[in-house]
Image (cartoon, rainbow, N blue to C red; front, side, top):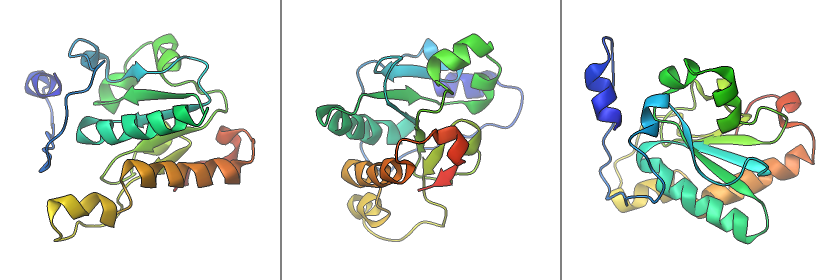
Length: 172
């Protein structure tokens, strides 16, 4: 578990808590967490890779389901620790995140800062929060699964089949 890693780490750590109920996801692994990131679902040849963590992960799994139903093969990566992930062997890193020109989108209901290293585009909230009811926060910031899908569809349309790495990182 991520919190166990935070307790063992001899430096600064953060444990972010959600104010909404978060479902338990099939495929999550407390053993794989120690590697920093792991494939939650999808295949190595997927057209699109979505990276997320923590309480945002279930929305990303829902977005991936929508893409897969629309015949856009999508893989989901859980990345609870960039620091631990960057310490893995390069073969493992590339097996989790295929850095070969296919689109890789990070989704986190916080800042997109730091995600350019691991993704070709990011969806996040690059501003301070709001004082709306908990049920209205994600729709307000366009972070529902449907909003995520729409933002990524527009990104894929803008890419127009081009190499996503060569296009440069985008905040979408």
